[in-house]
Length: 333
Image 1 (cartoon, one colour):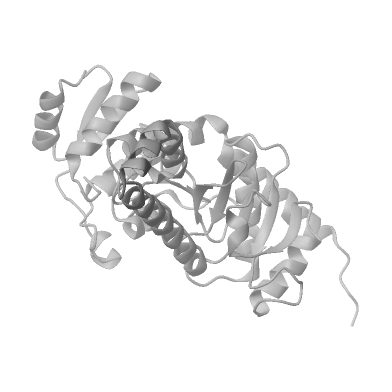
Image 2 (cartoon, helix red, strand yellow; image 1 turned 90 degrees about the vertical axis):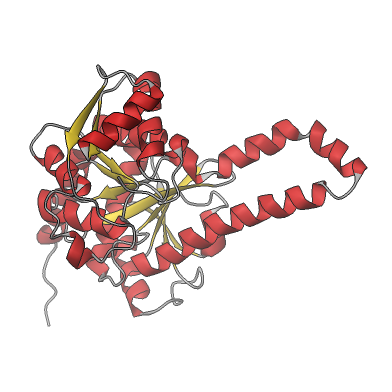
C-alpha cells in the first residue's frame, strides 16, 4: 500500500516480477482493493496471493502512530516473514515505519547493535554500496564498524565483488581529517581484517575508488538524496539544451541509444531499493517515488538478498570479529 503512486504500480510491478523472475509474491493490503487491481491487469492468481491487511500507514505518518496499527500492510507483511510464510519483504512505503517495524518484529542479528539501511549507486566502473543512508542519524564507533562488515558481506555475496574495498566518509583523505567519531573509526577499521583503503570524500562515491562507503545515517541520507537529484537535474538540462537547435536535435537523435543507456545506469528504479542489513530477516525498502519497474526490481533485490545467505554470513563475520577482540591482550596501565 506504500509509495507515492498507491497500490496500482505495486500490483503492476509485482506481476512483472512473477512473470519475469518465476517467483511467488504475497500482496499485503486491503483485500477488495488489491483484488480489483489484479482484475484490471489480468493477474495470474497462481503466482500471486492476497493477504488481507485493512490498515494503511501514510507516507508522512509519524512512526509512533504507525507502530500502533497492528493490521497495517507493513506490520502484517513483516509478520509473514517472521512466521516463515515469506522469505523476504519489500515495500516502497514509509521508510521509517518499515525499518522500525522490521526491527521490532524481527529483532536484530546476533552481534548487531544497529541495523543499517544500504543503498546501491552507480560509479564509473560498477556500483558502490553506501551505508547507513537513513536508519541511524547518530552513531558510535562500534556501529560504523558493524556497517563496514555488513556492507562488505552484502557486496561480496550479492554484487559478487570478491574483496570489496571499504572507505570511510570524511572531509579529507588524511587520517587526521574528520570529527572525533571518524578518527576513532578510522583507527578501528585500519586494524581490522577488512580491505579498508582509508578515508574517502564525497566525490569518491562515483569514481569507483571504493566498493563500500561507511558513514552515519544523517550524512548518508544527504549524500543519497543529493546524488539522485543531481542525476535527474543533469538529464533534464541536457535534454533542454539538445532541443534548442535543429543541429542539436539531429545529434540527439543519432545519440539516442547512448542517452538511453546513461539514463538506465543512473535511474534509481533499476537498483530495486535499499536492503536493511542487520535485522533477522531479508528486508528491502524502495523509494517512495517507485514506479512499476522499481517495484519489480525491488522484488528481485529482495529475492537475491534471501538466496545469497547474506544474514548468515553477517552473523559469522561479526562473531569472528568479537572473538578476535576478546583474544587481544588487555593493555596494562
